[in-house]
Image 1 (cartoon, rainbow, N blue to C red):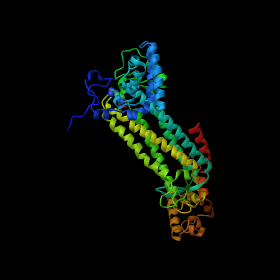
Image 2 (cartoon, helix red, strand yellow; image 1 turned 120 degrees about the horizontal axis):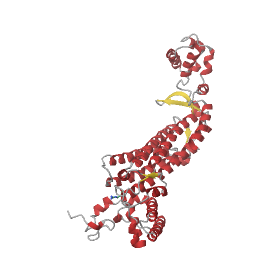
Image 3 (cartoon, rainbow, N blue to C red; image 1 turned 90 degrees about the vertical axis):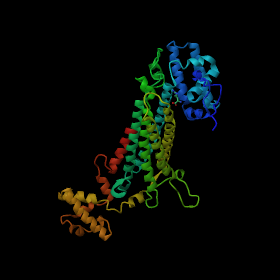
Image 4 (cartoon, rainbow, N blue to C red; image 1 turned 180 degrees about the horizontal axis):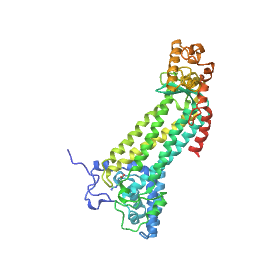
Length: 470
Ligand code: ARG
């Protein structure tokens, strides 16, 4: 085997190559370069550099003339990146050195002063936090829109009766609106986790330098404020080695994706022929290339499938981080791709879900018809025995079970049995029992806080608007 080639036998990296006589081998350059993905942090890198530069000028660490040249150069670079004329180079490893190198081309030696009192270690930590922060903000906003779509469905269908399930077996009547609001609670908790993660994230690592801080008289409070952080981070070692924000973002995201997936699963079931509970719009379904009659819930299935990517991304970073001694290790360059992928996947999934939910039609008749099977009012019968005949609940449960068996043997619902038939099981049962054996009455009676009674659902939807959307 031949020796691995170097990209250049003579030129070592201009940014750090002082002690090197030759450049890296091709394969070293390939494994080392992160520019293909970290170019997504260019706006954050420029913002961080501008804040750092202004601070260096204010503190008298670099002069105003150099500072202005740097700021102007960074603005030019920002425009070049935006209009696509910027050339990214793998030989320059990452976004930080690509930008600094271009700055030198644009303004000459003054560019070399920008890296005073900072290191790529605090620089990348800052850029990454800024990126994760904006991903959190976008995901939080999109999840808010999903919550709004769900609340609208709840308001429109607050009194639409359907079976509630346990074990995917019909259990008790609930309302469609109540079911929608269950997801509102879940996505509401997701938003609060994201917002909580943002609060902890919002401390600025810039100025921690390589790991130990710096001997220059920098003002870390100034840069923190300029970049919208609440304060600078307190410990320089922690500042450059911490990736908790990424782990927390993906953990919160994994829970959110899990909620999306559970809902997607329900939609897949609900729009199947056996159920027909909802109709999804043409805009969020696809046809089959062979079966002309098909309308498949692909968006729901993809959302259900994509949770694997999000949980996978979270796992990736946990495994990368778990054995790292303080402080920075190049392993940590592996933090970005999973986070970028998780963020893209989450935002796409939430947006697709919002579209599906907004267009979705609840099929009242099918939902109601499904309550006919499964003796959904059996609990209401047992509760009547407790309330009217003062039976202990356990005994009432037993009596009801016997009545259910009777109906099952006759192939009818319990409400179709005659009073006499019921009285063979419990003689004191009166005509009044039939009052509680309709699914409407069953749902209406569940007025306990958080219960499914339509009036509760109406009030809960209103409260949810205030809790989650104001
Ligand atoms: N590209 C690197 C990363 O993403 C930047 C930090 C490099 N620091 C270093 N000491 N080599 O982590």
